[in-house]
Structure formats: structure tokens, C-alpha cells
Amino acid sequence: MNGKSAPRTLGGTPPRTRLERGRGALGPALELVRTGRAPTRAVLTSELGVTRATAGVVAAELATLGLIRVDARPTAEGSQGRPSHRLSVDPEGPVVLAAQVHADGFRAALVGLGGQIVATTPGCETVGADPAEVIGAVVDAGAGLLAETGRRCVGAGLAVPSAVAEPDG
Image (cartoon, rainbow, N blue to C red; front, side):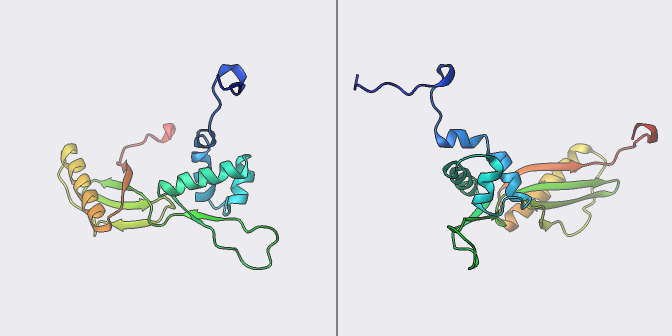
């Protein structure tokens, strides 16, 4: 023994590091930045109800993942106190493949985290009636868009037509 007692914790669980505590805040933090409700690290700290250090770790982790940008340059003159780091969605961040299937074909696009359309197929691509063929064509179109843009795809969404009964909504 080194003469030091182990850190005491509630319920016998080991203490968590700042990063481990912050990981639970990654989703809420990303949503705050994405919606513009946390334009600075100071606001993020307040909105999440965490310490400045934890908010810094959370912002750094989101930046490392390529989801947000952290700008440490001072804000406009005239503000009081220490300038806070500005936060924004990384416009070069990952995308999702979104496709809408129509009776006569489909249209595909890459959409960024902020909702901006990064790239689209040139027009409505025609396909046959076989669902496997349609999905294959959507995947091929998405792969082409990803190759053109060099972006990283983290998900996909597909909208298909369907009959909806009026009473059921």
C-alpha cells in the first residue's frame, strides 16, 4: 500500500473520468450545437449543466469525431470576460444517404448534419419493379456520390410510396 486510500464512491462503483462522464452528454451536446442553441462552449456548459472542463472534453470529442468545429479565436470586441470558444456544425463532416423511391424510379442525395444537401443524383433514376434491383441501384448511386465528394457516410434513409388509409392516417 502507498498510504493513500482509494477514492470513495457511491455504491462501490469506481470513479468515472471526465471523458466517461461527458460521453453521456455527446448526443445532447451535438443537438444543442446543431440547432444553434449552444453557439459557444460557455452556453454548452450552462445548457448541459456540467463543468467548463467537462464541456470542453465533450466539445473536443465531437470535434475529433468530425461532427463540430471549435473556434478558439476571440469573439467580437466589447464582450465581457474571457472569450468563449465558438461551436458550429462541421460543414465537411459526415453525411447520410437519403433516397426517395417513386413508382418510376428514385432520387438520391447526401445530406450533411446541418440538413444541407451535399450532392444529389442528376435526375430521377429509372429502375425495374424488383425491390432488390431498386436497393442495389440506390446503393450504387450513393457510392458514386460518396466517391465524388469524398465524404464519410454514417447512415441511410429510404422513403418509399405506400397506400395510406384515410381513417388510419
